[in-house]
Length: 444
Ligand code: SF4
Ligand code: SF4
Image (cartoon, rainbow, N blue to C red):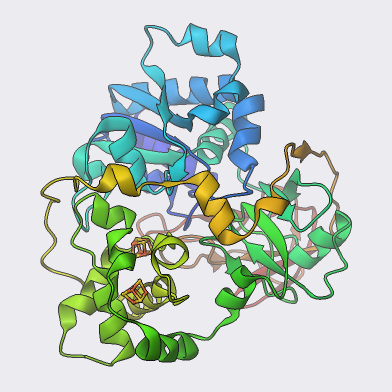
């Protein structure tokens, strides 16, 4: 198979990064990749999807990595996993990797070990230059579930119609389930016994980077990794609910310019010229002439260490930085003076944030369960809402119309191959009920 053929298989299967923003995976497949790094860090607290796949599908992952290595002409694949999770790996399969091009690399139990800049450094010692993408240093970073989706596509021609999701937080039992893409989140929570949400809120994603769920409108997408339920009164929910206008007002009144947010920033510690305290100051005081303080937010990954660990004034530099980054992106404004980091800052070792400290700082220790149940539930939603934009790039355009009959796996929307985007498929058998500017809605 050529890498162009592999790209097409991955595009046709609608595979996007299953753990982050949903970057179309076929665009990462390149003959310039020398090292494939599998992001098995799962560094957001309470998330358990990758753990599940590593435990139950390791051989499929290894086989797929060998295909990727051969097809792209890469030198090796590295599975970056925390030492505390090594027990999840089948020891026989791990032993069989000796002398092969697939290796396991133990990474420290820190947050955000899964940020691609941090992960690349921890697994290879390379630092991705500011504003660059991993392939520029010969690296492809890929999520565990994404590798598994490639396995399903190349072995069975199976497109992405299902998604692994962890449901956890303030619940009796954490579970990981496989759900049809497009199932309403509200329906999913009801089907798993979490329908009573009085006084509670739901986050799509982890407590650090996840966003509040709109229960009436949101559905499961190809990037939904976890649904965490917390009391409305929890500081995580309060912080996420606070409007940006209030966040900026609080910062203008209470920021003492101590720089702790920047000092703890994982990307700053890897030598990036990102100083979020300057962004906070510029944005909260409307210092519009200080363009660099705004533009450096392009280097922010939104990890939230500045907010949860750095700031002692209970401000939210993460939200401000991401808001500025989003505004610049919408206006097409780019930072021009990106540099390769000069060196890792010597203080990095003493400022790494352990998962345990993070859990305590977030106030979620009581929600950490010793065991996460893997449940097989045959979800049969009466309708699914397939989002046209579940990925980075252009939204997909519907290829079906109201009244069309579709079966699981049929293409229902697509972004043109030459554009950045992907393909969407029906996740249940049924009829197209509606096509809106956000969804293709299929009724069983
Ligand atoms: S969210 Fe904060 S800590 Fe994380 S990269 Fe952005 S500025 Fe740095
Ligand atoms: S840590 Fe908080 S108070 Fe200090 S500079 Fe950053 S935002 Fe301001």
